[in-house]
Image: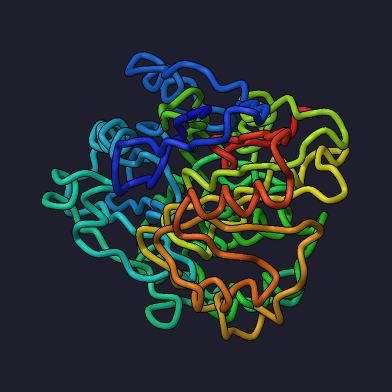
Amino acid sequence: MTELNVPWAAWYGSKPLTLRFPGSWQVDTFRMQGGDDIGDAGIRKVLAEPIGAPPLREYAAGASTAAILVDDLSRPTPAFRLLPYVLEELAAAGLQDEGITIIGALAAHRPMTREDFVKKVGAEVVDRYRVVNHNAYENLEFLGTSSLGIPVFVNRDLMGCQIRIAMGMITPRGGMFGGGAKLLLPGACGQQTIMLNHRHVRGEPFRPHLAEVARMAGVGYIVNPLLNEELEIIDLVAGDTDQAFERGCELGAARYGTDMPPAASVDIGVFNAFPKDTELCQAGLALVPLNTCAHDPMVEEGTIVIISACPEGLGWHSVLGPGTALRGKPSAPRKRTFLFSPGVNRFDCESLYGSHVTLFREWDLMISALQHLHGEKARVAVFPAGALQMSAS
């Protein structure tokens, strides 16, 4: 028996998941480049030397109100670590506590509870500052129409503040990186804006359109970390929304880069959705390293295995979730695909993937099925934090 521990259930536990494979299988682990935590000194250095903008204490000087966008638990951004430094900068600029609003930039996801906010931003921040959820259906301000003809509705609490900061994270998304202006669109925009952006903006125009909407909304400053498998901050960019983000993408290509297996060398690919494994709606992000690889490391009859804890079950997405206009009918994946998730049932799985993905809630049962398909000499590639990994080739 071969055993391997992988990180599991972001925000909902600290114990790894132990994966057990037949001893006759060849099991190799493919990790991203990663790095060490930059610590207090590293965070302070980045905030003192921002990219394309003055330090936040200078940027916010003279203002009396500021809004900070933070993402929800479907993303691993450790806002609780970064907010104390950002709030210290705003205080140095002269802002009082009552002038600062923390906004959960939920996009079309479910609202965050108090417990969620305590996890995301820390109990002291929840108790001391105004902390609110974005609502994609109400409390919106219309800013006009973008160059692509999309009406832009933005959170009114955000627009009511003089300083607007986005605290997302740089993370691989396949053909692009998340972070920067993406925390505004879709994070703090109206449902119509989110839906039309998702429907009409594809490929090359996607990031420029996000940047355009950020300029319309006056979101001019970001604080975006990069994380390792342990969810430590290994890099950080701060400053101008566009320039700092571009630097973050350069860092991300190196930090998240993963040396992939050779072409047609893998019988079973195990892709962990951690740290975006809170809900099934995000589980597909486990496949970013495979989808960014220039060659196919899987053999023709190989099996893709997505693993995701899903402590919140299926999850909620009012634009791209099951039954929504943009979801469409489930389509067959390019390879046979299994899903291991103890947090969902077959109806959850079918609502997203139809009959094209086979759900297993017990690891041993899935291994038995894989043995039946691949025999006793299978070659296995494990990607322990697939949602943070991307191909280095």
